[in-house]
Length: 397
Image (spheres, rainbow, N blue to C red):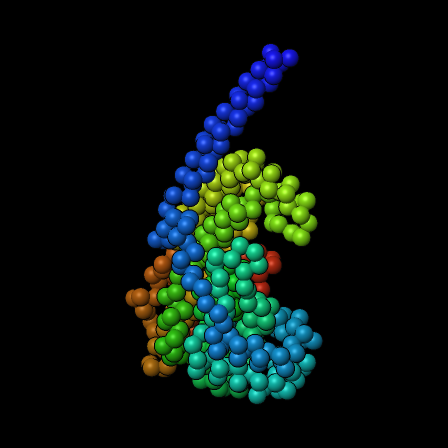
C-alpha cells in the first residue's frame, strides 16, 4: 500500500512539475507577444487603450440623438440608399430628381434636416461615450442612426445642388464630415468603417459641386483613414487579449456552480488559453504592421485564414484614398475653369498621386472638354454602394 501511495505521489509530483514548467513556458511566450510594439507609435498591447481616453457623451452627441427621433426615415430607407448610390456613381455634375416618396419626405422634414446640419456645423464633432477599459459591453453609438444621418445630409446636398444652392450643399457636407470625425475618433473598427462609408458618400456628392472647395475639405483630404483604422484594429486585438486574460473560461453569470467550474477550469487551462491568445495577438500585430505600411490604392494585404473582412476593409480604404484624390483634383480643375473660362490646357500638379500603384492622367480634348482618370481600374465589391468613379469627364459648357 505504501509503495502504491509512493508511486501515486511521484506521479502527481511529476504531473505538477510538468504543468508548472509548461505553464511557465506558455505564459512567457504569451507575455512576449504583449511586449512587442504596434505600428504608428501605438506602443505595446498595454498602451493601446491609452489612445482612447474615457469620456461621456458631449452636447452634440446628445443633441443629434434627440434630432433623430422625428425623422422617421424607415419608409424611404431603401429608395434613398438606391437614389444616392445611383447619383454618386454617375459621372457628371447633373443630378436626377429623387423618387417622389424621397422628395416628399425631404420636403416634410426640411426644417429638421437644417437644424441637424447647423447643430453639427456650429458645434464640436459628436463624442459618444468611450470606456476602452470595459471588457463587457463597452459603450457604443447607434451606428444605424449615424448612417441614416449621412444619407439624409447627402440627399439634402444633392437637392440643394439641383436648386443651384451649392453653398448650402457644402454646409451639408461639412456637417457630414463633422459626424464622420466623431466616429473616426472611436476605438471600434465598425465605427471607423461607418465613418469611412459616410465620408465616402459625402466625397461623392462633393464631385458634383462647384469650386472653390471650402477650407474644411482639406481636413478630409489630409486625414489618414488607414492610420485611424489601424488604431481601432489594434485596440480590438488588445481588448480580445485582455478579455481572455480576465475570463479564460468565459464570463461569470448568476449560476454559482457554473462559476465554480469556470474558476477551476480557468486555473487548469489558463496557460494554454493565454498561449493561444498570445499567438493570435502576435498574428494581429503583424497584420496591423503590414496594413500600416500600405500606400497602394488597390491594396491586397496578405490575410491569414479566418480574417477576410479586414482585407476587404483595407481595399475599401485604399480605393477611398484614390476617390478623395480624384475629387480634389476635379475641384482644382473646376476652380481653374471658373477663373479662366475654360478647362486648363495642362496643370503640372494634377497628374501626381499619393498612391504607390498609379497616377492621374488629365487631358483637354480638341472640343474643349476634359477627362481626368486614374491610371488603373480598381475593382469594388458588389456589396459597395455610392462608389465614386475614378474617371471624370466634363464638357466645356
